[in-house]
Image (tube, rainbow, N blue to C red; front, side, top):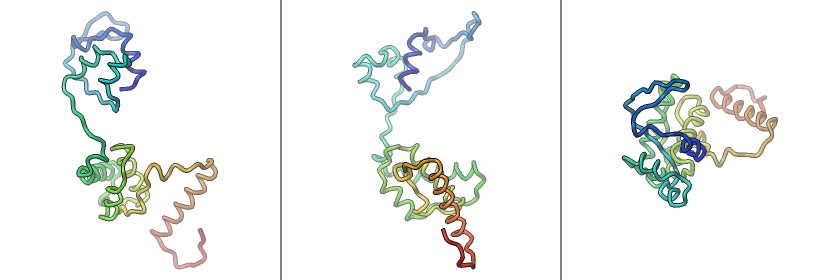
Length: 181
């Protein structure tokens, strides 16, 4: 729940309490049965105390509160989340046997995940690409902090081409020794 959204929200008459709304340009009220599920990485109680978040909205939305610690504080969830994301990636991309080695899993466990679960998902997506849709090895795991290199567009494309060629050569070794990268 971003700051700008709530600023804009605060200028409107809220009807979520009444479970009704009017379509734009209409004067007919529609009744709906909805529940709002909202997530934030900010401490809303503190923001209310600092007058940076509306107290009435806080109490209106704070019906059931679920606090989930960051991924770095719950390493026991890492393997299950990894398997979930790999299954999802495989299904979305039509990959039959996307797997991860135990050494790659250890590399995931040893990382502190400043980007939390979204970073894990992105890391696994990237690794699935680099693995060619096969088994993910430790060298396929590139964390966000590692791939943020200051290159101009031309240098970045050249580096990507080199990595792609190396990867292709590793997958389909040639008998010729005349290939240099």
